[in-house]
Length: 402
Image (tube, rainbow, N blue to C red; front, side, top):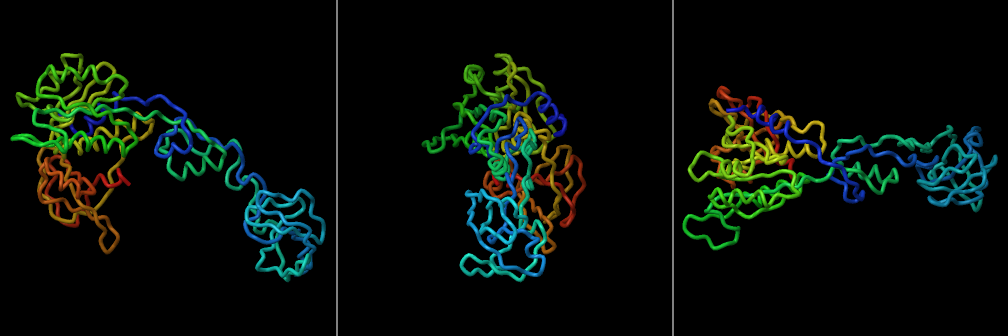
């Protein structure tokens, strides 16, 4: 069996960044930039005031105060078009363009106005309360590099730089097909031996949360001919996921059914718990990942393998997010030959350290435990028993939906 790291690397070798598209800035949050976002102007575009007050010549206040003639008012968006002469000032506000001839701002708290005269006992250095042109960024500057997942902060920056449209990587379209005679749509009347299909809606929700577009296909029956019909349902998608039918039972027919229509299997079975029966390959040029049918295993394998592949498709340079360190909140036993992914809660102790506490039951069909988990505690193959308080590595799954 392949190790988790080997399996993930082989999956990543078979996926590539998708083409670019141009989207409105208002739709760009969460997308990955495929070209640098440039500044279309300088910010501020001119010297502006950072406070409400009066634009002055600092030299007029050098004697320890002055009485100045207020000759105009210039709110933000309405610059004064004249030039300030000695002994004059202009009433301005935060964001107002500094008048020609002025080099400082006398804040209103330090001024006393009587009609058109402004009096002060303060002195000022040139540049006081002035935001210089280009202080934040200059026209033509690269503000956001290619290959970054855009945050709300990036969107605000791009907007300030006068960008209405940005170039991003196209969203991956991922087809999802669950398999099994026992599966019915959630909400259906369930007969003997039947269960609700939780994998398709769960995986679709996970894909949406990371910026992909799920394409939910009908449930496939335990029949090779039914599995082979997938070939006719995947036009226009960028990846195919199946859930179930990947194990060794006589009714686990995904591999055999898809190989009838051209699947080239790269590997099958990995040294992982939950999720040993994981398949990977290509159906023509289409990347394929066959997830286990147990819903917890399908979710964990999606976190470990599917999400890095989608990040690579989105153009991210580092598709594998490194685990974070925590301390164990309970003892854990020695591990066997498979890498374990223990569902766990997260908390902070009195020292502010992250504490990961695995649930006592780790069955791969226990969705209630998964829903209460915030992390996966990683246990290497043959890891010795660990004690409460020992350091451990975790993958945070709560951040996927943050």
